[in-house]
Length: 224
Length: 170
Ligand code: HEM
Ligand code: FES
Image 1 (cartoon, rainbow over the protein chains, first blue to last red):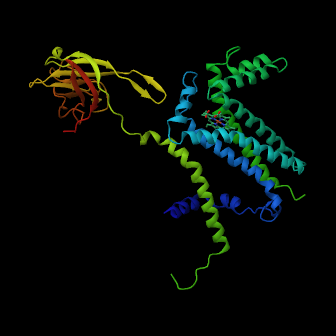
Image 2: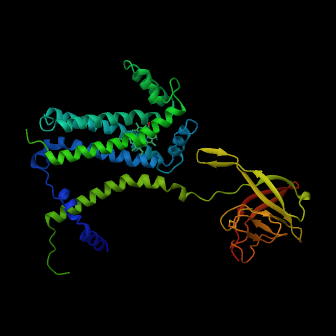
Image 3: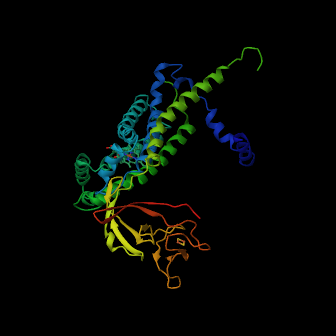
């Protein structure tokens, strides 16, 4: 049955080469930990991606219960954490994953740095990687406010003060982020929510796509 | 199957192992999320609490009268007191009848003698659904089942109503 559906589609639009191109792409020997154990350092990029997938999936499910409103945000998080079956686990995945993803990203960056893999012709992908790093920090910063507890509130207060220190445009920058010149409140929360679940994930997808296309075009850098 | 020893090739073995391990990891990841998502479906049905609707039994006549009251509702993290409505009267045996006004067609709100053309009936303005006084739907109008009746009890001469129980279609 499935085979028939596949054949029907394949006959018309020839999809086999698309996935074959990925499936038949060989892992070069020098990045395969089965050949050289030290090649495990090449796994950190993939692990970063894996944790990002966890963040996206767990985030999507959290959004089923979460409300970005100062009256209800904390209550909805408390409810999903204490009353909803497995809610604690899903929130835990998102909460710890947010830290693990940064750790993986740093390890991946360290590998690229110490192997000099960022050198010509791969400078562009290093730059894309740096952008991914900033997007990820942005996700961590905006997500941290969402539970709307004291820790979230005061951490955001501090983060916004830091933005305010930027020369010349500091004040505007803070108001833009917080949605108000002085108050960290209702409008800050909705903004951070929109940035956290729509804007930054969108940017992250685009950057990751570029990152991976570049890797396929340029190949993984050769053995040291 | 032949008698010969079935060979598992290296490729097959790796395929099975990878699919197995990958499937196990994906299941471990997705199971908590899916369980969380379907939690509302697995909740036990809520018990209706009886609430004093503020109507003395002696004030109930044989003509349906509209009664409004509030119930306590816990909706996830949100607690509120939404209103409920019933049409209440005494039938020929003196038994109290409390009908839900929610039309069994598509859920509009019916009222007693809501149309001048149809005295002595409940009328739904949305698609001209009609019910006789006992709440039974009039054949040939859109509703396919009678109006639900509220669970009821009387305490200290006051009427208490609980959940609206649907009745089988005619
Ligand atoms: C790499 C990607 C992401 C990172 C690093 C990240 C980070 C965070 C952090 C640090 C928190 C605070 C968690 C806590 O204090 O318990 C959070 C909360 C949240 N995130 Fe994300 N997030 C990511 C992606 C997403 C996506 C894609 C969505 C939705 C589509 C999402 C939806 C949410 C929601 C609804 C909350 C509030 C619930 C809660 O606080 O547990 N996140 N995120
Ligand atoms: S909803 Fe009452 S008749 Fe259609």
